[in-house]
Length: 601
Ligand code: NDP
Image (cartoon, rainbow, N blue to C red; front, side, top):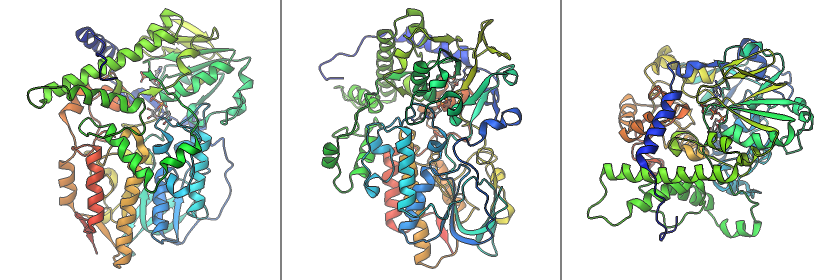
């Protein structure tokens, strides 16, 4: 918003009432239990359609470092460990290659939704110039392979391999790693980067198991059925097909325009509309990039983005300058308005709410401007605050609903009523389809060991699932007391900067490498966080009352544990002073060389 523009007038009371009405409509007592796991009849959904499993002999050796997960977390940590001179870093990955979420999510139109300049890790180290402001999935997978190859991570990697157990062996001062391929090897260090959203889930719709047509989850796109390619070749096999897609979250928003262009008929089953703001993707000009790419540029961009996403920082410029930074800028603009004394909490909350009302009113106005049919447009409007759900940005999603072959089937917050052998039922009407695509997301609020697919046995035989029975406990989201030489590379209890997830991962990778490097240099065998340090860290985390009450008012989704109150595994629990301050704090912690809170022996 320009300084001379007055904010749009909104009827705040009417909006609050509408938001509450829409939330209440969607609240349900079964929370996460409304979803079903991909087991039994649905186990086949998890088959890897992208690579054949290759036979290999079980490993019975020893390595210095093992990383569970070959996505960004494993790649960046592996790269940093290689930089410290560790020759043997073994990545164990259930997929057939590197990429993590980008290996699996090859649905048409998949692209990063924070800017490539900050989303793609190690751009400066690899010298890769992103081709677009928001890179598409094939380029992101290529980049993962580029990192693996540059840092020599491919040779030792074990693909199509799932860790089944990690057990601390005090005598050998190492972890025993067991897998579903009969491997049993030891590793001085282990790290886990399983990804925040990697266990696909299905909606527990009555009759879901009875459908006789074709079906798949978006994270295993079946190009053999649809035709086309992740690179963008049109899905020509859908030309005579009636296709249903269930779900309208961030995944659906990206793939629906492509389905709309290809399918004979497309039925979009919506429970809650996403907020869809302007994307403005464009190619990156290598000349422009060369001007940016002075030494240290990516760190500067990352720091600048995190500062621009915060309402308490005062960055001089906005390098990314997109829809993500817009809301915080509006709030800062309001907070900066002249007043007699600094804003108190109530004024801050009012500024936040007003900026949000204004932003969401613009997003709803955009729906009206783009979508021709007034009923469809009304149903596509999101009635909640922008950060209640992952905000979406897309320039072709809304206009897809102008095609005569595309039908929005809004369920008025209730979800699909039933699935029959031949179609999908909403409000008593059956929509016969040939194929159902589930864009129903991933487990978030469930126990981490369930999502990891294995438990860990630390010192004195303590299981991680028991140690965390009352919720996650860690220092910095990385070190867990009683689990020596083990590290987590993830979002929770750290910087918790979920807008640009890779920032958390690349930063945690630096910590892991710094600690291991310190141990090697000083001939230490074991590192553990002290219980006191872990407790002191937990005391510094949010529950921030602002966040808690904000989420309580939100429409259900994985951000607010499906409206059931904070999950003990919430991704949103982080350093109470905010992400920018966390990144500054942890930089100082690493640089001091004292590694306060850790005990080395
Ligand atoms: P989501 O969990 O965001 O969406 C699931 C969808 O399924 C929601 O629209 C949900 O509705 C709907 N749904 C659930 N149950 C039913 C039902 N019974 N009937 C009808 N609809 C139902 O999953 P996504 O895969 O879309 O996205 C997950 C996350 O992955 C994103 O939030 C984002 O963090 C990440 N992502 C990132 C991308 C990127 O970086 N490029 C791209 C895509 C995803 P309701 O909202 O009512 O629960």
